[in-house]
Length: 419
Image 1 (cartoon, rainbow, N blue to C red):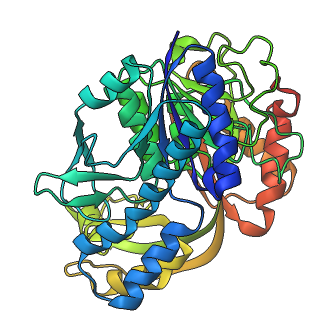
Image 2: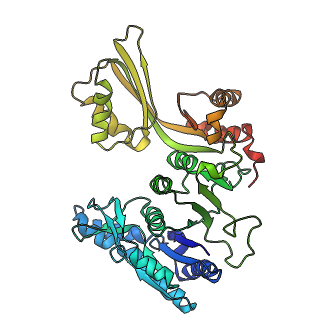
Image 3: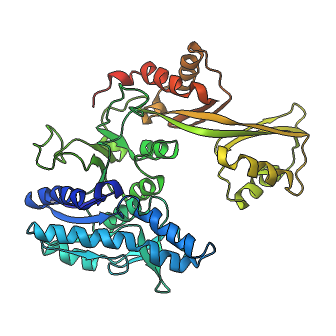
């Protein structure tokens, strides 16, 4: 018997029919003798509708009341899921974030979880009940409902799994696992059986949309094993051969659980990357803060950064990337930045960041150089390069993005990977 937290996203609970289908997945685990807790998102599209109502009511609305409205979407889903489970003969009840309770700070709209009291859930689980918890929300120390922002339901599920000491957290979504790259770009992309927390974190931050970085960070910190699987699979299908969780999917786990480490596990793509270059910046202590401090204050997320210092050390060129949507805003911020001296500022939109990721890169030299060769063989020019222990990223023109992904996917043998 295992203790499992099962999380269902918005597309998995988009209507009553899909909620019933998701409930059959829950029933399968209950019938197998497992203790199960469920975390749900709002029905697909419902959160956007609620946000729209808040904006229509008052463009400059109270963030606390915004959270009270927006959090209602998950409450509806949790109640409906419990009703369906009860109809199937399973003892179940719904819990809002404050009923668990899930404690957060008071940053309304983007709160962070500070702790979970697991007693209520532990008691229900031990008694054979299935608690259904609203994702995406909690309660502040001031007694107000809070919402967690982007990726909040996945984060809720991981936090609940850690609090109740679950054996794993199953994230049900509209894909059946983590792939070596986007199958829509490279049809030969394969589903990975296992991927490390670090690899998943890099993939999520570099453009893969399967999991949000916030939930992966929490899972890695708390040691919560994740399984990414499809809610649209047949709940009554025979167990997948050799799978400890009984179905297809990808296990996100510690590196020590992965015996054979591929040099490269995946290729990711992030489009709409803009590039800005400051030339001949006066190089003195504090120059980086003078550049990036104002951008941070303007809530502009900076990604790749490359700095070239002149031979005499008196001046430097600084190049970095940001989202296309922030390009004009960033230029205006830099032009108005106090104490920043430079000769010229230039930039362009429409770049694409291509990254190769793999824990095996730690012990293999030459991965970066082979990446550059593979792109050169296709006539693709590289504008920027950044590396870390387990990834190498390059910025190229967006028109070559998909060609680059396919070329690298083939070059590193991922077309031949086992699922």
